[in-house]
Amino acid sequence: MRGLAAVLAALATGTALALAFARVVYLLHMLQLEEYDTRRFVHWVILHVDQLVANPLLDLLGFLGVVALFLHLESAASIVVACSLSAAVGMAGLLWEHRLGARSPVKKALVITPRARRLLVCTTVLNVGMCLVLFPGQARLALAIAWLLPILAPVVLVAGRTVMEPVEALMRDWYVRDARKVLAGFAPTVVGITGSYGKTSTKYFTAHLIESRYRVLITPESFNTTMGICRAIREQLGPEHEVFVVELAENEKGGFEHLLSLVPCSISIATSVGLQHLEEFGSEAAIQRVLKGFVSMPGSGSTVVLNGDDPVLADIESVQGKRLLRVSAGGSLSSDLHAENIVTSTDGLLFDIVTSQDERFACHTMLLGGHNVENILMAVAVARELGVPWNAIQDGVATLQAFPHRLQMTVDAIGIRIIDDAFNSNPAGFAMAMEVLAAFPSRRVLVTPGLVSLGHAEDAANVEAGRQAAGAADTVILVGPKKTRPVREGLLSAGFPETSILTVRSLEEVRGLMRSLLTPGDTVLFENDLPDTYNE
Image 1 (cartoon, rainbow, N blue to C red):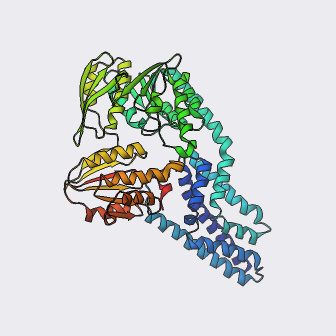
Image 2: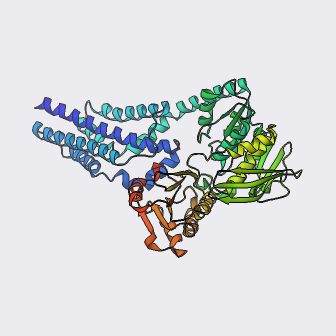
């Protein structure tokens, strides 16, 4: 009987450790989505503590651990019963976790990178170590601790993240040094692009306009942090590349000094200054200081292209040792390039580019949204700096395509227009998307979870977004009952009928709803798609 009790105690402990591992994997996914930032992860845990303890089996496991610890079970039979019950409940907990994960498909799955693998190993060692150190002489205490580990998973993961930080710092330094060597060895012309929003679209437009003359490499997707840029350099940059177009994150830890020491630019673009990432910077004034500072840094290049329609960037008069090129979609005659005769429609954009020498070049593009004129002008300014002729630029503008998830329109088999603007999550982009949606005929449906990362300005921005949506959509589907309350408030304050507001908990529900809601000729706009950390 004693032998059986020992086996069952080991099984119960192993089951609890397996459940703790499953919980750590889930939390590691959230930590990865928060870019391994401990402060943001802890903030997420605090906001979602109800989800972490929602599984009643976890609470029961903790309770059984306390019971096993304090009831002082003496007989082998009673220990066998307690351990059998604990093991059974643990296995039920694992099954629950598996089924819960199957019912909740993720938008961006956990990527088991070398860093994620190292952190998993570290947390597993911590979990097992806490039990093994005590197990030889304190079996019941070890068992109780094992039952508490699933509940303590956030704490253990943060501890593992802290333990591994010196190792990760050494590895980051090695990757940065290696990437610098690779970049210096091939020595392409570097074009850096930053700003609160518009970076990714402008990056792709710039690359497209200059590739008729140069062999170009761009940082893929939204790779805009130090490690993402290092990866692009080390894995993709080669001797054939003459120009390297790189997106730079304005919220990069360590600031622009760190990024520009990795990729010193020959030419750079500052697209905009806005409220995006207000949570990280703390204030709008801080964002303005950071982006103004970028323009004056030696690493931002001898030529900096500025969006002259942005009031903060327009306020930069001159910088010693820099050549500032200004563009304006608002027709500012003091700009080096400005646009006139802009016509927006559901078929794209028509406009003239006018130079400071009064040269005029007619352009057209299938891109939606008047804000793209600004992005195109900034890309054109770089192309001209690199000697691309105007006829090639006009041809390039005509063949520009929307970057995936940024006002990208498709028409399905039965004639429903679907506008995917899932990667736009700032007030200016939302306002422009509403203008685009309002231009379409027939019924217009908006699907949105609202705006995030705006700090103390978030609620007010979402109320205003609701008011704008009221003038553009006939039906609004809000994703997430809690976080979309300000959007609902804005809709109702603008007189939007409450019967035309539908609320769902996830995009999965939206897809089911669409089958019965939409008819041929309708237009549906997906505006913003939040990562899994925002799931309610």
